[in-house]
Each structure stands twice: as structure tokens, then as C-alpha cells.
Image 1: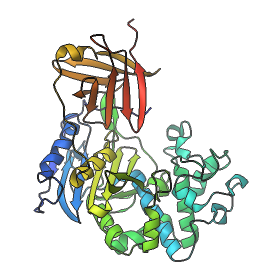
Image 2: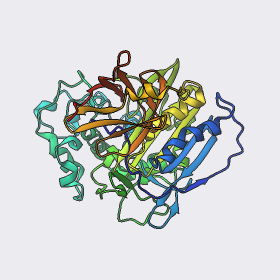
Image 3: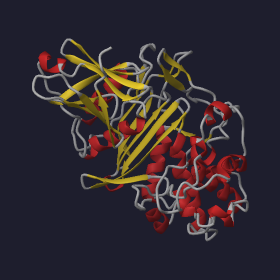
Image 4: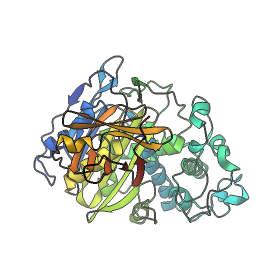
Length: 454
């Protein structure tokens, strides 16, 4: 199960820096900057966010602010110039590189991967580049191997070495019939880019994407290189914030090894809208939903009649999100150097707030006698219990080995969290105590019965 509540509440108070922008408000709400700060405030209070945020309309920032420390040991604050590891936001650049090679006539997305990876097993005979781009190949993801990070995170591997980790495993399904997020697929795409272009993946994206666009603060992250303004990454633990575990950056490769800044990602947003970084046909292919709310390196979904494309990223010590409404000219970029930050949800809400497709939920007041009916422990799994307590007129939720977080009533029996994109519904009748709760998170509903009293 995914974590419900970011941990690390025992850390020192967050620092905050901001950049003032004179851009006139152009969002659907006139007081956008204030409402955006109100949105982020609960995360700061809970010490579950540290990073930089930029929201822009038609290329002009409407809110830009940085919070927390790029280096907590030296009290160096995050700023607009801070470089963050992007994690899976890398995939949209990998997809762009593939489509550039398509535009040059050097490959087709319908080519079988075996045309470029000669050691492909017979089981991959039907796997195409398009399947890899859309996570529909059926090839197992190397990052899902049991104990992979514990055993392999410090050891460098070549792209071929990474591919070999799952190459001889059975496909999880017939190519094209299902969707399963697959980092191995994007490692293979990086391999194809190198094979076809004759350049390393890092050199290719630098030469053909970052340099032409003027993205001077974006590149392939290499731990041993001295990189100015690089943020340190932190992870949540039950004892507070800790330095993130080391990860050799050969391992994420074309699936997650890039770094950038909010400013460079705004350049990227504008390039996707205004520049000929891709032909119109390839740009349309990138942003087509192929049946699983996913295009080429982007999640795709309609929101209240508006087209939205977005993607999140998570890598040791970092959490990122970029949400775009291309037809509305709105983009929200959230880069955090804290692995417990729900950055993609924050980005989607900030973008939706600007467009007018999202409004913060409103809390109501319930009598304490009503609140007491929900107090108790609820078992979501054999190893995870969500405990609900009351402090005055406020209910507090706390998951196993996690910090406490307030929950707010939107109606009797219905509650929401402010620091996690999740809702809780209680099963309760009359004056009796609740017998169960349902956690609504990540598009899934999980029922948790009340724990029996010892």
C-alpha cells in the first residue's frame, strides 16, 4: 500500500525564500498567489514539503516561491536556481528524443524492439517501441524486483546490465493488452536512442534538447560531478528527516536520471507549446491517450472539460510533479528535495486552481459527540493500522510508523486531508461508533474494519 501520510514531523522548522513577480493575475481566481500559499501552508506546517514551485500562465509566472533548505546541514535555502533530481519526469525527455529520431526517419514507433536490441528474447518478438513508450509491453520493471534498491542501489550498471535484470523473465501480459508502469521499458528506449544516434543518452538530450532550448540548468545527474546549486535529498522516517539513501545514477538512466530547475522546466513547457522541438505529428502522438490515460511519457486526462497532461517523479530524496493545461496556457511545476512530499498532487491542484477546475474542499464543524463516533483504530492491512484520535474539536489520523495529520469533515462521516490527496469515509449508523472506514487514495478505495479491543 502507498504511504498515506508523509513522515518526518520532528525535523527543524522550514526556511522560506520567495521571489516577487510583477505579473498581473491571469488565473481564474484573482487572488491566486494567496490561495496558492494557503494550499501549500498545511504541508509546511506538517513539515512535509521542501522545494521550489512555479506556476505560470502563457509563459508568465503568476506565483513562484521556494521553501525549506537545499542543504539542511548547512542551512542553505532552496531558491529558484536550485537544481533537483527529476525522477520520472525524465521520461518525457526520453520520449521526445525517440520522437525526434522518428521525425528524422531513423526509426518508427511501430518497430519491434528486437530490431535495435539484438539480445531480445523470443518472448519480446511482438514488443514495439510504442509499447515501451506507453508502458504496455508486459516486460517486468527492474525497480519492482524484490530488494532491488537494498541490494543494488550503490552499484553502477550499464543500460544492458539493467535490461538483463528482467530480460529472461516471462512477460507479465501480452504486449498491448494491459498497462503496467515499467521503468525497464524506458531503459530500453535510452538504449535505442544510443544505438540509433551514436551518442550517449546524456549527450543526446543535452545536444538536441537542452542546448537548443537554452535549458542551461538541466542535465544528466552524476553524483561525482561538482554541480552548483544542487539540492541534497531527504527521506521521511518515523524519527524525522534523514539524508536520502545513496543511489548510483546509472541505475535510473533514461527512466529517471535528469535534474533541472523550475525555470528550465518553464522553458520546456513553452517549447512544447511554441517551439519546433518536435513536428506537429510527433507532438500530437506524444499527447494522445492510448487507452490508459497515458501518452508518450505523459499522463493524460480530461478535467472538467479541460485537457490536462501531467507526470510525477520520485527518486531517492526527491519528489516532483509537472501539470499542464496546454489549451489554457497553464503549467504548475513542483520540485521537492523531500521524498515524502506529494509533489504531483500539489502540482495538479495548483494548476487546477489557476484554470478553475479545482477548488480546495471546505471544512464544516461537527459536534464533539459526533467526532467521538469515529475515534478508534482501523486495520487497512496486517501491517498497517490507521488510528483516529480527537484533540479538542479536531480529529487526528496516524498510520503505522507515520506522523500524525489532521483530518477535516466535509460532511458527517466524510473527511479529507490537506497534506495528502486522500479522503476518508466512515461506516457508521445512528449513535453507534463507526465499524469501518474507507480510504480513498490514488484512485483506489480500501476498506479498513475497526480493530477489536484487546
